[in-house]
Structures are given as C-alpha cells and as structure tokens.
Length: 523
Image 1 (cartoon, rainbow, N blue to C red):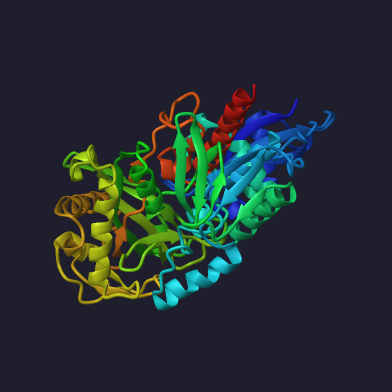
Image 2 (image 1 turned 90 degrees about the vertical axis):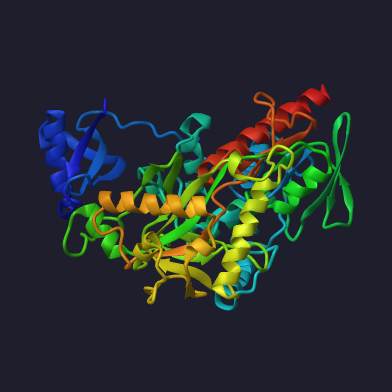
C-alpha cells in the first residue's frame, strides 16, 4: 500500500526532489531506495515564524502494484436536445454548474444571460476601465461567467459540508484549469485564464443540446397556484416555463425588484461594506514571510486574512488579491464600486483586499417592511463615492495612515486602479459607524502586522458588493421558494453562496432539486 506523509521544505529546497525523498523517507521510516515515486497531494505555506512549504505526499514503494486511477472524474455529458427543459437565469458559476448537472441527469438547460460572451465582454470592461463608461448589461458583474470570471478565480471555500468540492475542481480541470488547483490549499486560476475555461464549459453545454441565450434579461414572471407558468424576456416575449433556477448573482437589483413587485417573497439580509486597501506586494511579502529582501521565487505572493471585533461589529479582510489589481465594478452609471482580482502568476507589484464592516438589519431603514433596504443602503454609499471621485469611475482614496487619523492625503501612492484615484476624506463617503470601526480595525491590524498601517497603502472607496443584500427564501429540503412551485433560488444572488466554489455547489444542488420536482410532477 502507498504511504502518505507530511513534510516541511524550505523554499530554497523546494525544487530539489532529492530533498523531498530524503525527508519523506525519514518521516515514513523507509530507506530512500525503497521509494519508487512521489505524488504531491497537498501544498500550503506556513509562514508563522519562517516561510516553509508544507507538503502532503503519497509514496509509491518498489515492489508494490500501482494504484488504479479513478477514471470517473469530471462530468459525463449526454445528448439532451429533445429532453425536458429547465430554465436557468444567469451564466455565472451557479448557472454553469447547474446546466452541467442537468445534462448529466438527462434534462435540457436553457440558460438566459443578460450580458455578453467573454470575448465581447472584454471590450466593455476596457471601456469601463479606460473611459469610465458603464454598460449596465455587460460589466464586471454581468456577462458570461458572472462576477467570478474577471474577479480572480479563487477556488477555496469554507462550505465543504455543502457538497463535493473535489468534483467541482475536477470539472474545472476537465475544461482546462491547471491541475495545481487539486493540490493547493488555496487554489486559484487567475482572471487571465478563467474566461477560456468558462467558454469551454458553455460550449460543452451547447454541444450536448443545451441552449445559452446572451443579451437576454429576465423581465417578468407569471405564476399561479400551481407554480411558475411563464417568464418574460427583455420586456418583450413571454415563453412557457415550469421550472426556473434563479442564479442571478449578487448585483441583479432589477430582478430583486421584479420579485418584490410580483409579490414573490424576498427578505433583506445582512452584508458588509467598506473600502479596498492596496499595499505594495513587497511590503506584504516582508511582513508575512519575515524577510528583509525579496521573497524566494518558489514562494507565492504573500497574502493575509484579518478579522477584528470593533465596538460589537466584525471588521475583516475580504477577497484578498496578492499580486493583484483593483478594478471598477459598477453596474450602473453614477455609482462607484471597486473590486479586486489577480492574474494566474499573481505578479502585479500590488496586493489588495476588501476591508469591510458588518451591516446588520438594524443598520438599514425598515428592513422588515422594505426587503430592498440593503440595496438602498449600498446605492447611497456608491453614489456618494461617485460624486466625490469626480466621475468617469475615478475613485475617492486616502492614505491608510491618514484614514486612521482622519486627515486629507496630500499625496496618494501609485495604484493599480486604471481609472485613477482622487484624494478625498472617506468619512464623507462612508457612514460614521462604518468609518469609525474601520479606523479601529486598521489600528488593530497595524499592531498585529508591523508595517501594515502606513501611507504606502491606500484605502479606495467603495467595496460594497461583498454579498447579496437580499435573500430569496427557499425550503430546506426541496430548495423551492415557499410560495412558488418550480422556482429555485440559487447561489450568491439568492443568499446561499459566497464565491465560485460554493456557488457551483449550490448550482448542482438546485439542478438536482429541479429534476426531483419535475419527476414528481411527471409521475
């Protein structure tokens, strides 16, 4: 039987397989010559004292039979051209994986995407970054692959109990992702590589007989006592529909309003809001790896994860992008939203992260009577940021140390944010309770990470789309809306996921639930 061991390797020794074998043999109580081959199962970096690689290895021994590899990885697609239909709204991770799951179950997915395919979408993103032109239907949030396509491709999740994370990763590898995502403790594809993978998944869905309709926005839902009856597309035609997976993403405000006006129950839910903080990457490397010069080339760009309770609210880092770039993520003109992403090599000279404060129902205006209260909260802050930035997606910004001291920044450090930064006091953008708690959080983080609190870093407003401010209720067992048979709220937009992995898993679950519903109706 192969043996599994865990070893620790210095970065300078990482590329030397002889050292791997020596350490593995010592750990397993073997002789080096007994080891036929080594397979890397898991890789992480422990930088608590000194940066070292922690490797989980499988050792195949001489004289033993090799393991039979599992050939059932990924998805097996069949022809569903003439199969019963299930409609999906949204071609993000939830919608894509729901579509693939439906095909495996013998059903035909028809996926409606308000935005464009990944190639056409790039032109709108360029216009947004270079000229400040926001296309409400094609931006960093809307379009093929959803917000995840051009938002880094992070693949780690705490939601391992919700579904089979390995199967999601295997599926991504099947469609072109590098196999490193199967072994890294914090797997990551990169914004430069993810679009091609998303496109391959969509092409496989279409080749199997599914349909993907771009530039197609959900504008109406007809229902009766038996459930969903029809949906309207682009304020024009109505088409018959008896099973609908809503996988819209967290920024589909018009869909939330549509449901509310159609008397389909939705609820305001807590979210988080704050700023995006950018440091020079070499500074984060020095802090996290405890080094004076440049990091070893085997080591990845260093990251951090920070959380602090300040006056009864959590202040925490969100969507940390080592070697990354800040991007404009507005979905309508007149608002300013920022997000972050990293290329696959994480080789930008900057590191950025959302730094946000919990927004509870108590912080909103009449959230019980008005389920859109969270959206209105977000929108007020985003419009203030736009006005203070000066338009064309130029963002208001403040040196991090100046932010804590409440001072105007005379000089703003260079930034990855292409539209540009305008020096401003961010207490004019953020609600007082958010600004003050961020100040307390940054002080605490500065004590924890020496060098973190510095005017080499810049705070950029506003990071407001951390999660959906709305939850669309669903039954725990059937995953259907409690009032509308055949309606399956799904993924981040419905309030049941937070990132690519958990959204993909929820998409699979909702697809299986839709199949179960249709089987019961048929019988």
